[in-house]
Structure formats: C-alpha cells, structure tokens
Amino acid sequence: SCCRSNDESIGKVTEHLTSCIQQWGDSVLGQRCRDLLLQLYLQRPEVRVPVPEVLLQSEGATSSSICKLDGLVHRFITLLADTSDSRSSESRVADANMACRKLAVAHPVLLLRHLPMIAALLHGRTHLNFQEFRQQNHLAFFLHVLGILELLQPRVFQSEHQGALWDCLRSFIRLLLNYRKSSRHLAPFISKFVQFIHKYVGCSAPAAVAFLQKHAEPL
Image (cartoon, rainbow, N blue to C red; front, side, top):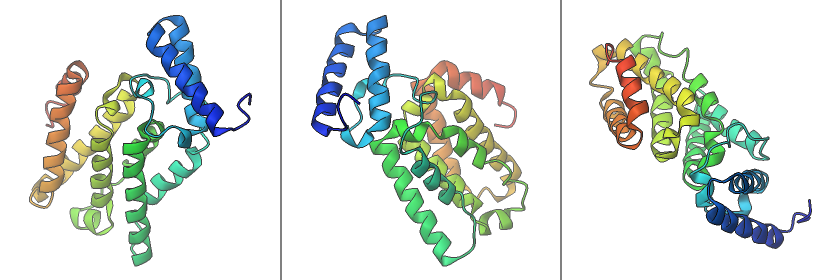
C-alpha cells in the first residue's frame, strides 16, 4: 500500500529487494526480503517480466497468499481439461493450451501454484477403452499437460512440487500401462515422457531415482 499501486515505485522496491537478497543470501534477513518480493510479485506479476531470477530459485510460492491472477489461471486449466466434442470446445482448448504455455515461459511461478490441480484433473480418464480415450480428447489433454511440464523445467523439479509432479507422472504411467497394446498411437507421448524422465534424472537425481525405484515394475 505504501507504493500506492504505482508501477514505478513498485519497480524500485523490487529492485532494492533483489539487491538485498543478493547481498544477504540465505540469511534470515535475506529470506524475509525474498518472501516480501514474492508477495509483491504475486500481487503485481505484470510489473516484473521476466520473473526475478531470485524467485525462480526459491520456494514458497505454492503456500503463499492468493495471487490476483489465480482465478484466471484456474480458468485456463479448467478449459484445457475440457473434453466436450465440438468445434468451439476445440478452439477454447487450443487457446487455453497456448495461454498455459505462455504462462509457463513468462510466469512459471504462477502456473506451478496450480500444479496439484493439474495433477488432479489427470485422474479418472484412463478407465476408458483406447478409442474412447482418444476420441474424447483425453489423450490430447495428457499431451498438453506433458508439454507444459516440459516448459516448466527445471523449476517443476523443485522439492516443493514433488508431490504434485509425482501425481502427474503416476497418471502418465497408468496411461502407458492401460493402453500398452496401442503403443503405436502413443509414440509421440512415449517419446516426450522418456525425455522428460531423462531430464528429471539429470536435474534432480535423488528424487527421480526414488520415483523410478518405486515404480520400477510397471516401467
């Protein structure tokens, strides 16, 4: 409120906080500056593009207070998961996918806050036979989500996102197991999934190995 929603004033405050974080590092004071910068960013994300590097390397955005764009991001993700069979629905899904991909690049912190929701929306889809699964656009949704996760690398591998990430990966494995007889049609998904797991191992080996060991049998 002291900045009175003035973009120039907010910009100066964020620059000062960024400088303080770089100076004080992981000390108590540095962490408090990081927390304040995160709150400023969540309330005025449009003021800082690209996202301050110190926020991309920190944790806490998932459990932080509400962001003014949460409602909009929620709407994009809901539209992305829509499986209605109509031309207008396909157009909305394409627009939502493009919006989510742009967010993943420009504002990954905002999209990662909703990773648990994305993981939950993957549930309850792989019980169908493969023809229904594909015709009802569930395969397209899985491909869209995997594509978004690729853009969120390496931040999606941070420990605070591990629960939601593993939830997504388990859904991917269920897809591969249930439709293994249709692997020819799943070739693009399988290729992307293998590349993603390879990147996971390279960026966060202990967590990735733990996941792979836990799911070694189905894989």
